[in-house]
Image (cartoon, rainbow, N blue to C red):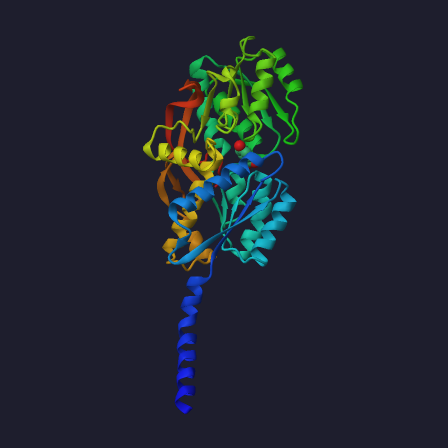
Length: 390
Ligand code: PHB
């Protein structure tokens, strides 16, 4: 009797002694992924979710023995909803990392929550320069509009484009694109004769394009967020702007790989600058595009997918570096300075700014195997965000 009690107690003690590390290892590592899965930005959500799931399928759903749990929330791209979801994920679900953020207002709305709770916020899509300055816990794997706009403003005047009208969505990334394109073009001896801004929600491009037609610049420079490019292209062509001798130049958000192939041959020849093309000629990208397409009924990945895929990588590698332990500050420290080959090319998370340093490519829409692609023809290597104030 006595011996049995002793044995039972011994077992209980042994189990207790073994439990803290066993518990730590068995606690899932939670990633709260907040994306616009419905509404105007839904393609961004679909692309990033697919890329995150592909990363997990390829790299396993455990890191150092800890199960990775992805908790997906749809913010419908309304920043008040993003903030509420982020709060719930931190307080109720006790997520280890917040990630996603389809548009700038959503990323900014979450910044105070990241700071207060010391939770890393991995921005996979939003691209206004100032976002990383809104919280020391923000790390970005997408890009910035200044980063990609400047390259086009260097290319344009060397290619006969001196007088430009700009047309951008009227919020953070559009205002960044407008300013950095204009300043650089002016520096290069060109001129932005008119800067037009169109509302982000339900934009009607027609009256703006009519105005551009009347102004007759050498080119129209456009930024609209992923998902809106096809509408711009359609109306640009319908109004015969190209036939009137006005060239369309843009950031790669407009000739978005998610929509490009459906834009028709009118898109051929459009020159853009951006950090990712599905046609990027590297072995890593070929593998990525094939696997993504196979897992998603032939869907072509766009730059949003790459931001999501690389964001997952940054989170996985950070968790590995902490030996599976995690912790907001330790994860953040392990995210800073990461360097790796992305499907887009070599990238680096700048430890000072927590922003991504990457190549920017000049591309032209061309037909390859009967499909429209952004074909890269020049590269500016290791571009830091020129928009940082410090
Ligand atoms: C943004 O809101 O920051 C944003 C969204 C879509 C883009 C670029 C920037 O394509």
